[in-house]
Image (cartoon, rainbow over all chains, first blue to last red; front, side, top):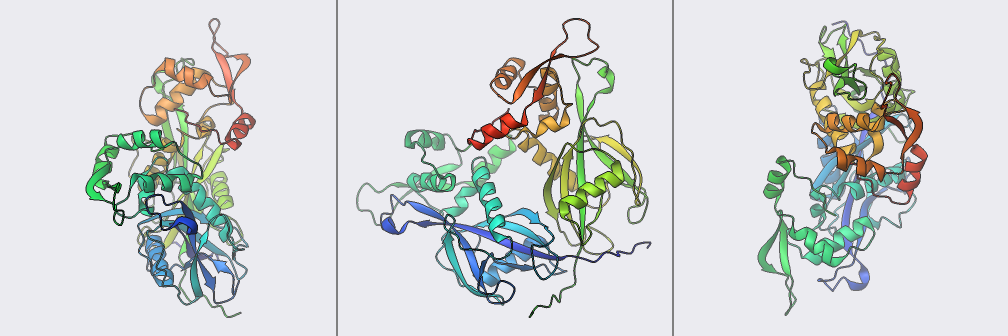
Length: 242
Length: 242
């Protein structure tokens, strides 16, 4: 085989931007009106380089695993979270992004619900915590830039794909649904127009259930119907959610 | 430095999906009504593996060049084309995608105008040719899959970003503009609605020129104004082109 690969090879890593929604502290008790914040999972680095700095969960890709599998493995090892949605984001290959040597990183973005239980922390993670995306600490490597790109993707994609449901519990109120969009898009939506839009979407389905712990005027619970969405999607249905 | 990277490393490559528009053979003379086809650039492999098969232009990433730079270098070496638009598409990392060993490929997609002059061909390319995307030959590696993903990105992105102008000459008629969208989206657009939509876009600007070689009723020529688009874009202008 007339093949010799004579080039020095970059190391190959994956890094994961995990987003979640968290009720704002001041009114987390008011379930029917949950004002929420968009948060991202960071781990504190236990090793050099950037020891003690916050970073995205991630690590090197093994020779016998796909990129998706490497991202899933790192998320389990470093967070213990169960992931509702995972997609490849972008591959970052600037020459000096890692002070040790050339490391190319395939970044992923993931959505989880709920955000509560972070087990943390693998070999190179001291602890794991959720941070409000608007008040991030100074990050290791180019991870601040990676989060910016992930936020841009999330804000753009949530408008024409039903990925935002990955941030909600399986059953949700229309108020929770609206707050999810408002939190991601960072602007208020008109309630009347929003409800009219949602009512037109056959894949947001009312259930028989209402929210719990609310004695009267409890709101109806809805669910996302993946099969109904897939069927519409195959017909070339043009989704513009918001 | 307590760091040792003990894993065996995949090789890292870039592959480029280059799209162009070509007038359909039967009416290439009728400049004002150019029915067009979407074509993609392929090179014929001069070496194993897949010797003699068609493949995307591409090659291995050097340790001292960024991913973008590697894509640009391969395009110059293997096609000589000047590229109007280049963006990273997706990174393909299936385990057996290359029969030699593990190769992870960062795919790019590019737009060019015109499609005519392909100089071709680097070390591992025997010749280069344009193929209609609807009648592709059997391709090397997973390059058929990569082209599918690129087509999906192009068809989706052209609707909300002005990237399609990269497929047109600097000055174009509104008929050319409409045919470009029709060719990419693979469906006819209503002329009246299309013209109304375009008239509302401040970044599609009429020039003083009209098309050449047409003695009477020559159509007005337009240009894309990047600065006007950027200004609108910064105001959070919501582009829905088509």
